[in-house]
Image (spheres, rainbow, N blue to C red):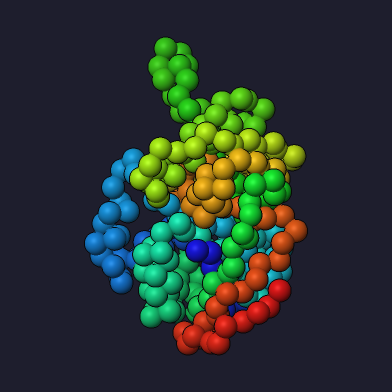
Length: 262
């Protein structure tokens, strides 16, 4: 299940800090906790796939802030949210619509519109573009001690770990042995470094890539994110060249009739 969430700012222009994913993560968990405390508690368990992801925060128009600490947004702000678990979608979207007043990094917004988006029927062979960069890490010994190491698309292990991560998500979703069929070819890659927590940094990759393989594996990535750390804002993708069709629309907290926008 995938959604576009549009936010009306209280002030314009509004600031978007470069390192903002943890603010969106906090919003998601607070709204889930509001409607489903038991689900919220289960999502805080360590080393369990959360099976949701989200894009970076965007604006209709944006420019670099004068102090170069972030961006200045104009018009609506918006971001995408995706999950492979309907219960998570119901809790988060329901929590947003029930309490549409939102504060992020000191800026105030009102949820203007939520759109549920159609999903493509076939994913294998399609070209994908990241809406939030893909993060893949491993452990390497440096100076005699194992340390976290951020992999790049130039390293074969990058693709091996993405496949294994997809297989793990598949098991959690379907409860059966995962398929093996998965190939990924990166067409372009651009690194981006984020401070995910004070003093903790992650290098992740904005990608354009083509993927082939089992539809179940690919759909796990499409809905829950490719790579790791999806619940802190990494690994959301869209199908390249496809304008999302709207399945349902809620405006100003009220559900509108089904839309057939292209």
